[in-house]
Amino acid sequence: MTEALLRIAGTRGLQAVSMREIAAEAGVSLRVVQYYFTNKQALLESGLTELGARMDRRVKRRVAAVAGELTPRDVFAAVLGVIVPFDEQSRLDAMAWTAYYTAALTDPVLAAAGLALPDALENFLTVRLTAAQQAGDIAPDRDPRTEVAGLLALANGLTSSVLSRQRTHEAATEIIDYHLDRLFGPDLAPT
Amino acid sequence: MTEALLRIAGTRGLQAVSMREIAAEAGVSLRVVQYYFTNKQALLESGLTELGARMDRRVKRRVAAVAGELTPRDVFAAVLGVIVPFDEQSRLDAMAWTAYYTAALTDPVLAAAGLALPDALENFLTVRLTAAQQAGDIAPDRDPRTEVAGLLALANGLTSSVLSRQRTHEAATEIIDYHLDRLFGPDLAPT
DNA sequence: CCCGTATGGATACAGTTGTATCCTAACGAG
DNA sequence: CTCGTTAGGATACAACTGTATCCATACGGG
Image (cartoon, rainbow over all chains, first blue to last red; front, side, top):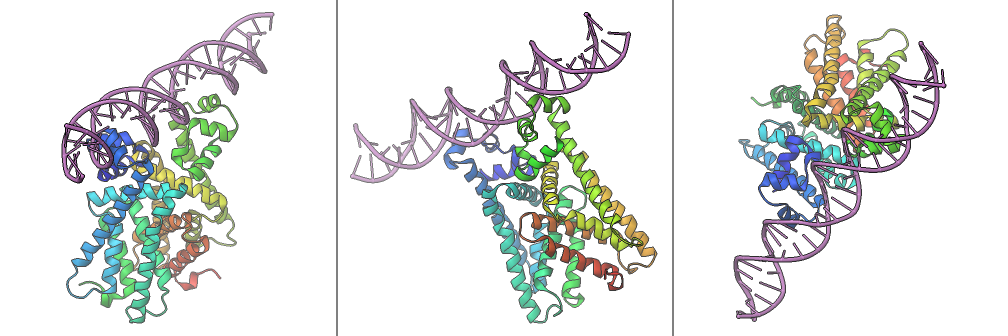
């Protein structure tokens, strides 16, 4: 049922999401939607939670696919590579996520629930990059906090352009890889 | 009246924009809104046009403020510096712009009218950067098209984080300047 | 003076929205 | 068997939406 919500949000936008639309999309009656989600707000929050869970699953899958030891660069490639949509499903999710993010800018309730994830992500990556710097994996004159902020902003901006079909997923990935090469140095680039 | 529209879109979101709300915000009657904008769609399009015009005005103002000759870096600093919100007014406009952009992702009518500007901007900057490269202002191993795409994506991503108050305008500008320094070389950096 | 046109006030209307209410079934515990 | 709880169908309701209609005024050219 939350899946129906995200399907609508990803194809027709959050503003097209109504209790009745979800009921129709999920093939149930309006009452059932009301029954399992008392509020529309509870419904929306469940969508946001599910989006976060999907993102998490994708990162874990990518990390698990890495053979051998996990380099810091692998972590960044996995996280950033998951932000930019790479297939139909992740494109729909990214659409829904953008819709949520925009809504959160003017809705304080959604903001509290939705802006925590990007923040946590930035902190997580900053911690990892700082550790990588102390281990000598990146140059000492880099500022981990600034680099992470720049990379996340880049990935988000690229996502926008991929969603609007201004750019393909491959072109976006290339740009990200280029920046990762510069940060981690060519000796750490994947073969 | 279009101003009232953008004020609402920037503070409460596009979905809060209704004919009656605009009438109230502009201090006129509903009929007047209907009279000057026959459709709601015409109303929305006028908002988009106005946003583009404001962006244009800001760029021109920055360009005009440059003393002496206009370096390629000045052009980029002006354009990118105008994308990231820097005062209350530009913050509201960026909010409205984000709302429009998100709506355009699922509304083909808005997409045709709204995605033309970013596209034109990217082409314009690519032409300028290619010329700058031929003049020796940037290293010959850079790909102008990729560099422009990356910078615009970065600026857009930073705008998102500034709008969500995750980052200040100053922090965003710093990151952009850092990337411009790397692209144009320190010898062309502003004093 | 007179009338077409621009401007705008008041109200109506059908559709959609979130939410609430009322009524059935099913079903396991006692 | 009975009863409380879970699950869901049918419908109602007030609020809001975009749009349309009916009217009144102003006003400049003939």
